[in-house]
Length: 200
View (cartoon, rainbow, N blue to C red):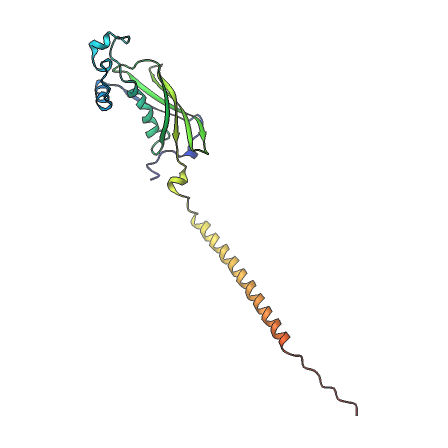
């Protein structure tokens, strides 16, 4: 389990960052349209898209945004984290053939609620195409792996201490019982009274 799990809450600190880069292909756009059902011709029809403000086809905004999820699920924090919320602002279009780089950066760690806030940004070359923020639920190590076992030496020392304490208590109880019995016998046995002869 530990080998497959990503980072735990205790491992995260403000400023940690990770990236994922993906070149958006024609196939990516067509497949995303089929999976999502978003067949807006601005993504699929070059003739239609040329007459829009973009002057050509563009990739789905959510296709590029999904690369943020890729970073979370595979790199930081990695497997096991849970997406709770995401805000997005689409700053510029992504076109077929563009390489999108998604970056996430830890902004805040809330250990009491196990929430971690990230700044999220997608860029093409040096230009920002998407930015926003996300909140994730991240588990503590003990919740997933259980409390760590004490080392063998530590358990042996603990057993020796326990045995010594038990022996001391047993000895004290035995001594107390023996003393009590001895005292009881002493009180129960009358003292011998010396015989006194009368003066002749």
